[in-house]
Length: 68
Image (cartoon, rainbow, N blue to C red; front, side, top):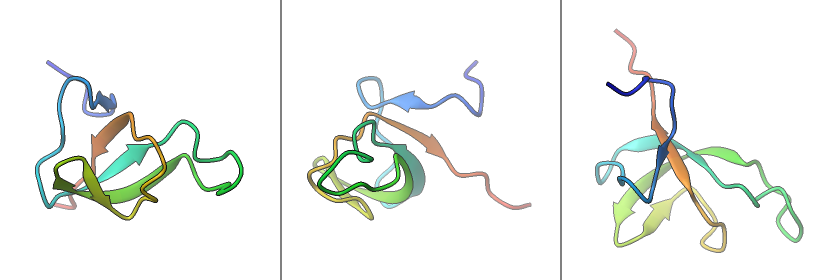
């Protein structure tokens, strides 16, 4: 069983299409963009994301906690 707070590698699994998730971009903090390494984005399929600059490599993701 996977720990609910353990990030999932994109090498292992992509998030469901259309779902907002927390993504990790290991080099986003570097110039020229100097952006956050962690960000919320939506996977739309074919390796495309809404909410992340297309030049940033995304390596991991984590489902967002849904309020009850």
